[in-house]
Length: 379
Image 1 (cartoon, rainbow, N blue to C red):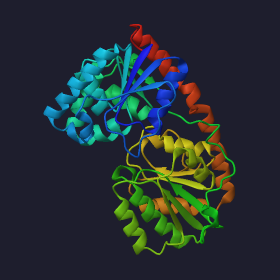
Image 2 (tube, rainbow, N blue to C red):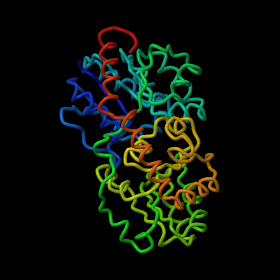
Image 3 (tube, rainbow, N blue to C red):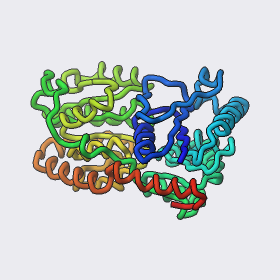
Image 4 (cartoon, one colour):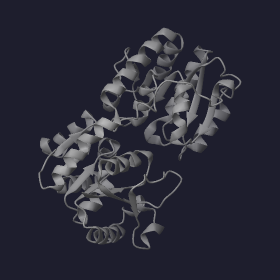
C-alpha cells in the first residue's frame, strides 16, 4: 500500500504516524505544508520526504492559506504531487489546512486527521476554518480522531457517518515513558533540591494557557514553600513569560529549561511530582498521557478532552480554564499529600498503559486505511 502523509510539519507526533506506517509495511511518503524549522524532527527510516514545487517553500504556509490565490497555488502543487505519486491513500491533517487542501486537490481516497484543537477550537472561533473543515470532511472516506469530544463534534456539527470514524488516543510509548531515575539537574538547583516539583511542558502559545499556569503557581507558592516549577517549551509568549518571572519573587522556585528534545522529556517528567496544563482546548493530550505513563498526578484544565482521562480526586484535579486560583488550590493540596500523589500517579500509569499504548492503537488506523485503500468504506 502506497500512502501519502500530508501534515503541516514533521513534529514528534507526525513521526509516530510515519513510523507506524513504515513498520506496518506501507510504502510511505511525507509532504510538509510548511518549510522545515526547529520544530521538525528527523524522518523515520523508510519514509520518503517529498518537496513542494518552488517557490512554495518560501511562504509562511499556514498564513498564506488565508489568500485564495496562494491557496490555489498550493492546490495545483499538491495535485502535481498526487499525480506523480499514484498513492493508494492520502492521510492529511489538520483538517482545516492540510485536509482542506487535499480535498481541493482531488485526493482520493482521503483520510483526514483531526488534531483535536483544529475542530474543538479553530473551527469554533474561525468561520473560514469551520467552512474548510466541512469541505475536507465531505470529501473524506475516513476520519481519524483521538477523543470522544472530537467524535461528538464530527457527528453533530459535520454529520460524518459513524462508520467513517476511527477513534483512538495517539498514545505513548509506555516502555519509554515510565517511572525511573532521572538526571536533569533540576533537583540540584537552589530552591528545588527538596521541592515538590510541578512541570509544565506545553507550547508557549495562548491556546495552552501557560500564563494561567504561572499565575496559579505564583499563588500556590505563597501558600506552600515546598513547591517548585519546571517550565519547558517555547513560543510567541516568551517575552511575556520572562517578564512575568522577572516581576515575581519566584527566581529560585522556577527552572525555565526552554525547548528540550523529546528524547529528554521523559527525564524531566521523572524528576517531577505533578503535571500541569492550562490548555484551552485539547483532544486526547499526548503531553498529559506521557505524564500519566510516567506516574504523575495531573492538575489540568476542565475541558472535555481532559475529562476523558482525569477523574477529580482520583487521577488529579481539574480547574476551570483561566482560573489561576483553582489551579493554585489543587497544587497546594497535592504538595501537602505525598501519599495522595503516589496513589494518583499509580492509577494514571495503569490507565495510560491500558488505554493509550501507541503500538496497539495504531493498528486500528492501519486496518481502517487498508480497507479504504481497497475500496471498502469505513473502519
